[in-house]
Image (cartoon, rainbow, N blue to C red; front, side, top):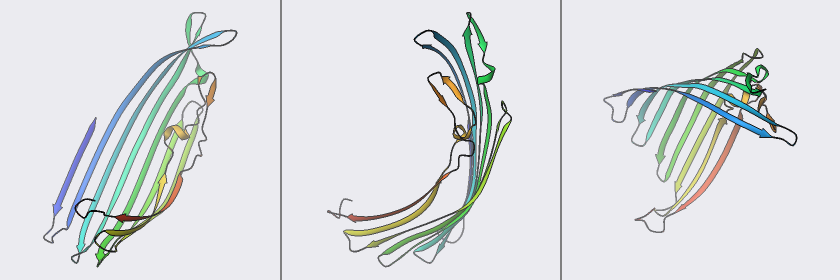
Length: 231
């Protein structure tokens, strides 16, 4: 199910506004999957039961303040909280009876919190348009694998600057340059310290200390309009 709340306040100054938004979503997934593996000397049948519960909440307050006729300052705070509960177990067919494989069970709880504050300044001066921003972000991650009593705890604080400029050489030609830093974080399945043996040919496991990937990107571009009536 999903829930959404929004609030907007406009001020006397043209273009100045304050918004507050909150969203919440939750979902459940259930998978029952029978499998049969045929080997050279024997066959083996298994049943896989996998259920997961996911939720995500996002609250954000944003303020836009015009400065002069061509510039504005946009600032705000945001908190994202999401979690996952994974319950997995496997039955093996032995002597025509389904027996639960206690060594191949997975009960994992994952919680992630991302709290941030940001500010962006944008404007235009003659033929030059620009945007510069900075985002401060604190991430807290906790996970627990109850089968082997292993706990995961990660936290990191980061700064994410960004800027972009565009220069209009004339009505038909523009130059662009931008820089940004972003993060690609592992999800719950990527740090769950569980050895997946559902495929008897391939065992899969991950490292619980898997860290995020940081990406610094620089982009440049050239825009040419052949016909001023079409872009």
